[in-house]
Image 1 (tube, rainbow, N blue to C red):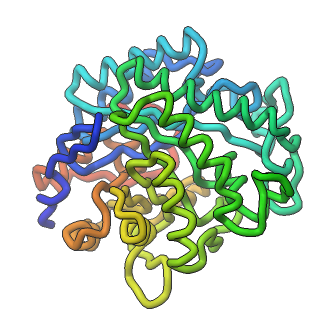
Image 2: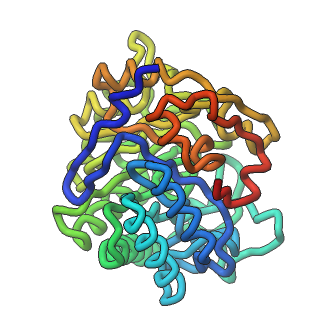
Length: 368
């Protein structure tokens, strides 16, 4: 495999990275009471040592009581949690890496298998996690305003702690995505509507608040997906025209990079073109994009939760699409979760040393 194009530098505003490989955000649940530990800091530092160009943290929740359904998901608020994140970014920088936190509000969730629930009800646009499943409250306009401010504060804290960028989690059926989706947004006020652009108002206001708090020179990323964990074949934007009407207002609001999540990066988004999700977003917006989805391994991430193992796979098709200009950066999840030195091994052609992936890796912070 000729992977030279994966190892070209990339710069945009505050973001200056040594290569095009991004460590994808992956929930780890190793932060008791929301506080990132020394082990969490060591886990991320090890990925910087392994030459991931940009590390995006696991989802870390904003200052809202019901933003999380898991007591071990890290917070991005409060003195202790922010001190923990300061240790993380200092360690990453000392190893020559760059990093941004993925700031997150889960919205309406299923109750966690542990039995833990937040002290206030889950909140979302219409109380729905998926069509027909109500497990929380409908947000008032006052709730919405407070949540928007909480996103802005998290982004401001990311900048003040020394992170290189910030990513807003707007994908995979969580709060922002619940506003996007007609299946979970039944509102009749200014945050609802029959069209995707109408239902994008909440996301746009979040982005504008984040941009206001971090300034024009700080890189802001948003992660988006068409699919939901409860609806793999869903498409928010069903045509290129609908995608343009959805994506460009988000870009205008202040997004620099779109992190376009799909289950398999090689699958075309629309008939008549082999462009994937990231390719189409770049085409309609002109903005930089990150592709992600089963890079470097057979099988997909959701299969891993079901106990499916994966083996290393070729990067030839990925590189072909990058060289064609379809996307700018490549997010890699499970290979880097299981092996912090995956980028280095790819760069040096040590493909015989690449590891497969099994669900056991989800249960630990792999350090070697």
